[in-house]
Image 1 (cartoon, rainbow, N blue to C red):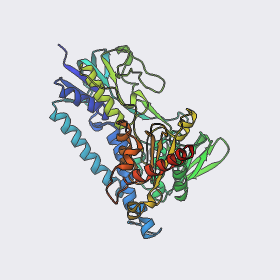
Image 2 (cartoon, rainbow, N blue to C red):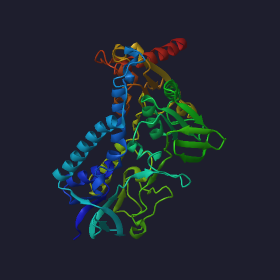
Image 3 (spheres, rainbow, N blue to C red):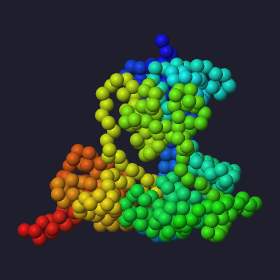
Image 4 (tube, rainbow, N blue to C red):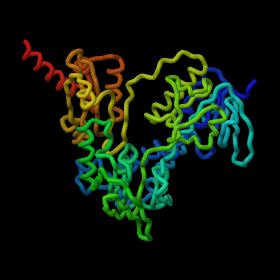
Length: 467
């Protein structure tokens, strides 16, 4: 008899939910993770600290209140790193306690250390003391997550040349900063530091940023970031980063030189699989350290599963949790529905972006007819009350069956607001439901009714011409 029915390597969102789901089904479960990383990257250097930092930035700078109280409004004049990290450390500490409590309550054994495969049913646990012990299990879940990819040509010192995991260790708020990479993480940090008053330059080798989002939304984000003195260098590649006594100098392939206090690289992520000895379990990873899985999150070895960022896209905490639960149910022979194709995407820039379904460009490319309904926060009483005059909600509606094809939101509360659209789409509802529904007043949710009326009025105009 093996030590456990279920062994999970990694305690991030995916691993944690897999372990708890299996425990709820009456299995003997164990989780292996480093003692300082309970909760994974998500809790310690990724999702939770970066989103908490964003809240601290918005609160201390008073940025979101300036439409009401004037452009010079600021809650605290000289914001220090200590001001920002105090809130972050508090939240991270509480979240780690919650995770430890959940695992303990569900009788999940938590082993402190790192794991590597000895064979396809055995993991060697290296404890902090250096001792090794063998753990055997019927089913194993790999949920080791990722680390920031670091170009070999760049010398990181974690003080002036940083990646997204150690940007939180800055000793002071930089007066100027170069961010290499205009992906989700890069743009979130660009927003935050720009709000703090840092002069930000974003360098991206592609011709644009966040190209999977709605074009109008990205144009709005660019406008707001430029308003915060962010400079964009699209179609540019970094040739070298020089460290000097008084800061850094980023040299681009085009010959441009950008002086700054600090440089942050946000150029993708690398799966944490190097030290797992995957070959001993009959597995392998691609050059980005990612493991291939089927629709049930099974690897090539049927009793070994992989979930979360280590399997690649979409690499979101929310989807990782669902992958973990789904993998556990499948391993335990429990019926489980396949994860819904409709996944909301949330990007915590300033302002927030969130969307679900198709973009206008995708629908145009697929030759699918659609009508657009738009609501702007400045036309809503709630928008005026909170001082958000630039937010917007966009509905893409099929004129044939009146179903929602996509929902795109930009502004305060976008990542919360999107779930109304998700529910309507997931249940196969139509735009008429939103037209007829009564929303609390004054709320941002009312934007759904305004956008729905806009879309149906346009559809009605077309129908009248045909009569």
